[in-house]
Image (cartoon, rainbow, N blue to C red; front, side, top):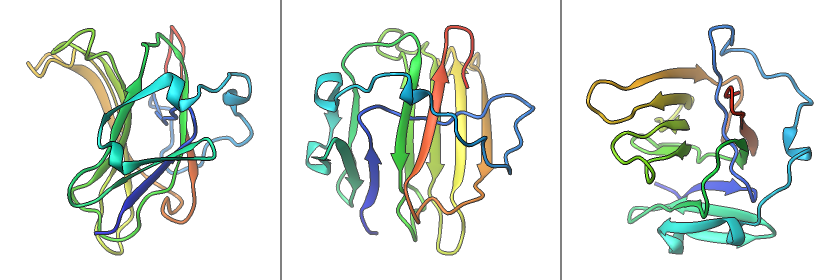
Length: 178
């Protein structure tokens, strides 16, 4: 399996499609970029490595992380956030990626272990000739005790996420997640 690449700008970006009015087969409305109204956070000032620092490289204000047969890589924000705009430009690895999930997520697990909330985006690995599936999750009370409240949705992408970088984002306000 080749290296799986993710290039992240200095801030996280997630895509969460929420609500029953979302049509999973239509592209989003172009032209709305809240990040132009919100300042970016320098990676080295705002984030720290969790594991796999040998699988991270910073070039021109973009972080590239990759996966090989020995390890992947992970990082987290230095301080917690109660809301904000989080996003990334991501280009996925083509070919056989079954068993690999490329993900970005927001979680308060450190503050509430075993009873945490989570918002995440996952690209589920695939086999040759089959498209990637985008899966989004929003969970509260993620204790694993059967009392989890949440929503999981899967989407067929109308584009090939391996051909170029695509922007995925979440806008999280005190009242809603978009």
